[in-house]
Image (cartoon, rainbow, N blue to C red; front, top):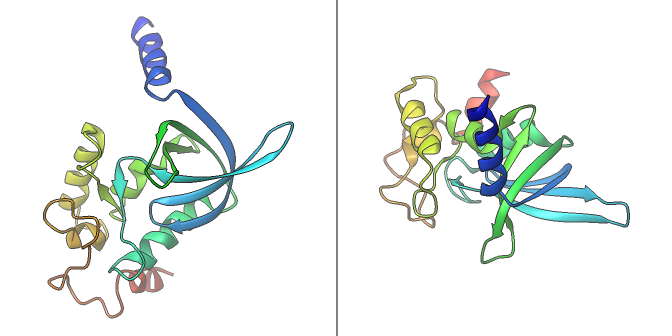
Length: 173
């Protein structure tokens, strides 16, 4: 019981602030907009999923990562725990939905990877390793460049999937 209390208190200290709201936009595989309703007003918050990185527009895997996150969260109520903002003013947060941390789910499913340049999360590193070992993990992890060069996710050595990672989703329907 003591350990449970310790875990709850330490996680509250790790993430100082919390917002709760409805996801009204999915920008890409690691950024959402959450509409928070307070008694006085409605506030839209741009939230970057902390500790992960996903392909940007124009890069291999972008459509699939965005679709996956949109399928999980669009119109749903989420809780975001955070302590800071990035240089663009976005909240860097851990997104909780249906008792799952979506940051972890995106890495686990292979649509994002651990952003080691800005995160030393053991959990994210472990999930990425497991996703790479898992033959059913999706292809975005295979396309990750060496290092964490955020601007160069496209990999010419990636397998030809006939239109990118998004086409995999079409075959699953």
